[in-house]
Image (cartoon, rainbow, N blue to C red; front, side, top):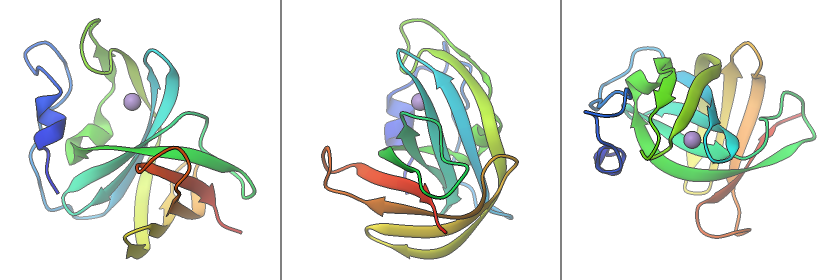
Length: 148
Ligand code: MN
């Protein structure tokens, strides 16, 4: 777990985003940001190992079983990013509006190299979910869906 890539991509003198540090979390949290950047997308963030592991989801995350969403792994974010909302200035990495779309408790059930099984207790996303690595569209592609 490292925030090196996250910090390298940003200029914290110009961006309102938190610089952050790796912390040991109490309760595990998740957050989904609606990010109105060059393309509107959703950023799924799971509190694991003192950081928020992150995936960019191009379409709205599934609230019901039966819908699979592509999720592209992105750089780990600091835990305090779960509370971040604001506008990343023009010309900066990820420029655009960021708001919290959902947030709540995250309970990890199973973790392996290519599979994460977990429960989410948010307002929109509740129940048992999975992230499964897929070969579709390159090495950082996962499928995100609600389990039956
Ligand atoms: Mn984003």
